Length: 109
Image (tube, rainbow, N blue to C red; front, side, top):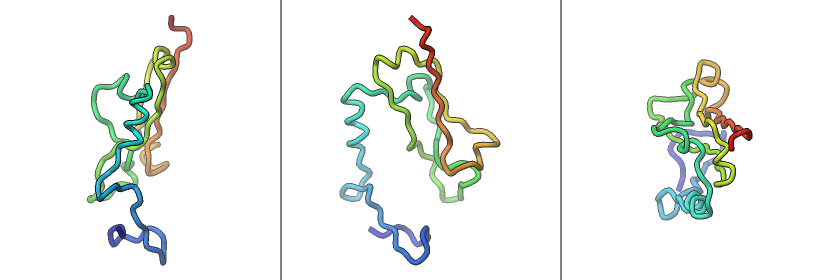
């Protein structure tokens, strides 16, 4: 289906290809979970934090979403000491997505 009336690329119609029968398809994320991968952010944080849009790229109609992840397996998860979505004055304007950072401590037992 054609995207909203907002042109992204001049002289081209942009189509949404990420929908399945008009709904967001979460099957790829479910496959990651089913195969033993963990969302590193939620292993260390209990609350929602958006990764897009950044403050510098937000509009009144923008919806705060989280579409950026660092997935880790069970073996690596024991070394995870921190996972953050970096939202600050610098990252507000660097991109339309906030960076994600994980810290691994391989000295843990």
